[in-house]
Amino acid sequence: MLRRVPPPAPEAGADELPSPLEERLITLIKANGPMTVADYMSDALFHPQYGYYTSQSPFGTLGDFTTSPEISQIFGELIGLWLVQSWIDMGEPDFFHLVELGPGRGVLMDDIIRTSAIRPEFKKAARIWLVETSGRLRHEQQKRLRQLDAEIAWKDRLEDVPEGPLLLVANEMLDCLPVRQFIMTEDGWRERMVNVNETGDALAFSTAFAPPLNAPKLPPADDYRKGDIFELCQPANDLTEAIASRVTNQKGRALIVDYGHIRAGAGDTLQAVKNHAAWPVLRAPGTADITAHVNFSQLTDSVFDCGAAAHGPLTQGDFLRRLGLETRVAKLSAGKPEHVVQDIQSAAFRICAPSQMGEIFKALCISSPGLATPAAFDPR
Ligand code: SAH
Image 1 (cartoon, helix red, strand yellow):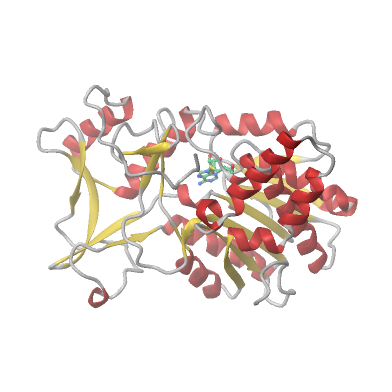
Image 2: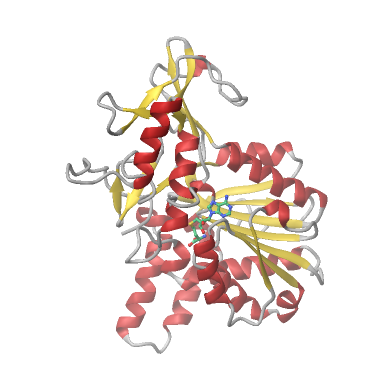
């Protein structure tokens, strides 16, 4: 089962008990009033005690979802080669920061470092930083990566990584950053809120009465109909600006891969996944993964605002094929027994085929202006 392409959410079972976080939020909302969707998402995913990423083991067949690097080693290998080529495009600096945002179980960085052995000078020049907020996942990353002969440090935020030439990668990280939602009403945009239902025993969506504050990028009301939803992920836009400013001031490149759409206006994309199936977004927060589609057109605007170059977005399938997925499948399969070849091929199919993760996931490159066109992103 693939992550973030789940079937429609089932009705929550009547026998499901509320999660501890749900009970706390119900009490808080009764006392203080409704909360924004972004604050809800933030608590559901990152609450220090009950948040999904803080308290659960999300990945793999026993977890709730799986990601491209977890499915096929080829994903990280091709990205490793892309990074080595980017380092060559940057003039082979003898020192640079290699950063991954939201490394999950550390599989992608493992494959990147392994592959980069093709150019030992790359590995020698790389100062590796993993930006991770979850202590639990940091621990998993440390366990996986400590056998690599590489100097790695962990940080909470990109801002804590020192300035300098940069190569950065983020896979499925931006889609868990909290989004605000706005609904078009007869009186214009109003924020969508998380409230309690009429009987006061479960969470339910509601709409704010007053116009929203601090929502600078809301689109003109004329382009929308009553009931339409517009999503704004300020943390994703801010992060993109921080990356773009860095690569404008110092040489560098970033690769953002995520589940998302190229044009704005996709409506309500908030979704929850639990045990590899869809789950009601407001049910038992802290026990399910919650994401929203990444709005790549908003990200690209942020890149241009900072004077950096943006390439793509490309579909993940095109990105991987152009980097040589088929050749790598053939190389890995050579001389292997039939069942291993089948595993290699079906994993490659899952990350690349349009019906699987190949179309819905997109790759965006943020680059220093003036560098060569990055591998795979040349216009065709
Ligand atoms: N990139 C991994 C994991 C994706 S899940 C993979 O492809 O398998 C999202 C990851 O982002 C988790 O590691 C989560 O803890 C981390 N994360 C979420 N919000 C973050 C933030 N604001 N800063 C850093 N990491 C974050």
